Length: 461
Image (spheres, one colour):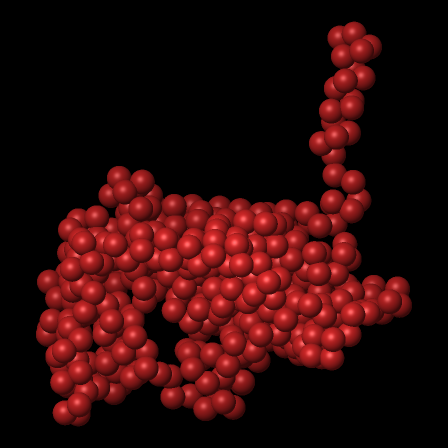
């Protein structure tokens, strides 16, 4: 190789190499990639029939069922908008109907969502603060919730995609792509109705900038995606009336009854030793809200009203609306804003020793919370780790005590692996579903109600 070629190769390698600034920003994403690869290799690829979370079985089975001619909301009861099942349906087609490949694709998608969420948190915090230490700390703060990193290895979960799409919507708007921002915001709602805050945020950003053209593109992008998402409901499944019942009426009639104190205690239990960092993130969010309300141009976040607004919305949902206290995944949307709050706190610490202490404390909590208590489980059993269960043990599932008189049904994971096409729309019998059946005085073998029938039952009950 000539000297000139060697010089060109050296220059190319230098251009590809990260400088210290880029390495700091990239570290949380590389950490996420490493962690997710570890879990995929040790959990998903560690057995012929990988362990699966029950709700992942619901998402993935119903997606597969749709490719076999099943009709969402008519042949299968589901209180969410259709995007989750259109996504798993697309994965099922990519998998060629093979259930193992479908599960593997779902795990890969969820793992990619984790990496994307961490990267977007880093970018958004760096945009706000210009601080290449605070931004990586915010990204790493996503791992404060022990189950955040390990849950993707157990299959599909819509909460990850709604956070990814919601943060992506904000990122795309700040980069000058309002139409795509509207698409991403609508997608977040498609994965969970309560993500409606994200379309409101990007619309608010356009109004804040008094950019009518951007506002029109945001709305056009969001409406266009919504039309495409709902088209199968109207044109293929003909289940619009049933969708209104299950997506709108059911959540209003079957809300979680836990007290605020019980929800608070459950949050502490799920975050474990990271709970003080949740409070720290809350202080950062409060600081941003104060700067915004006071119009303090001298501090970071004074124009980023969407941060405290988004955090307040998800806090409201957790404490008063939708938090299944037995699980931690309902905390994931709010976790993204807590992480941003930690980044805000870090950038306000001008003293080098205090910042180093914050970094050291975060690293210590991550090691204890994730490696020891949460995900890897070096000492204690990891969170959300259903091991491979013999098919014979899944042929029936225990219903909650209040519904023991109902006829037992197979565990949804049994239905998934056996590729069973259900004979009734109420085949999963989740707690919410049982509450709804009790509310409208229906049986487990009844058909899914349309809007007229549901309204009549509710009025007479």
